[in-house]
Length: 315
Figure 1 (cartoon, rainbow, N blue to C red):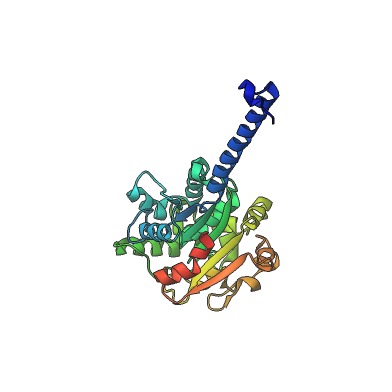
Figure 2 (cartoon, rainbow, N blue to C red):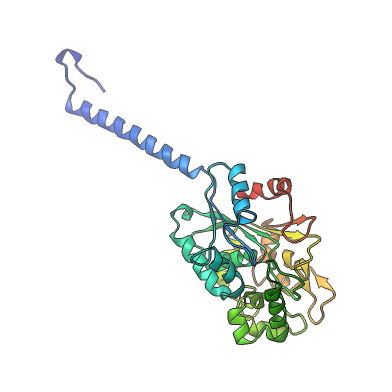
């Protein structure tokens, strides 16, 4: 660009050049802002377990605070299924899991902070539920799924449950033993929806309205497989002294060998893996499956263990 300074003005062509340069600087500034935003922490979605709620300071509230301390600036959404904390806790026992997953998917789809993708972390049954979200609701995209004590092959046994009401725990045990796969129990008792009876596999496959579906027990939904395989990492945490989940191998996608309830088999020994109905075999070979162990009872871990083992998957 050339200017005649003695005439105190620039030509039309010179002014166009100035505009072009200024426009270029504006683009650089805007793009810089976009890069900064895109380079920020990946948002995190967490889902609590049975008898818990989104915001209990001794559980999910504490986890949220811990993550925020370890990853400054991160956006953490703790899912609340219901209009308040009480409903959230009650729904963890009594609201059809498929409806809960629909509610969660709707919340994620409407949250502007999650639209570029997010990591997820589910605790106990929340691990299964977030896997259902990954399989059924690919938008916004889930990047890493971390299941902390999630029972991915279900449970067969209910030794104890959290909360202050022993009557409620006793009632759930009796209901499951009496008729876990009856329509009324399946529709209104969450734990029945992932009750997996190895002595009656056909009854389980036909009667389970949640777990049998997301585990592709009655047929193959290719979108479930493709959506799960889109994950970068699927992390599963098993508690080595778990006194609540029976069998605890379910936390690593293992379960009882069909027809009995004594001997367990690993995921890699199961038909789910050999037939690759969920794509887990392919994910395993690609290094997408991560199996972690915690030396404690159900959901019992130290802050140091969490920071060392889990936080790296949240970046």
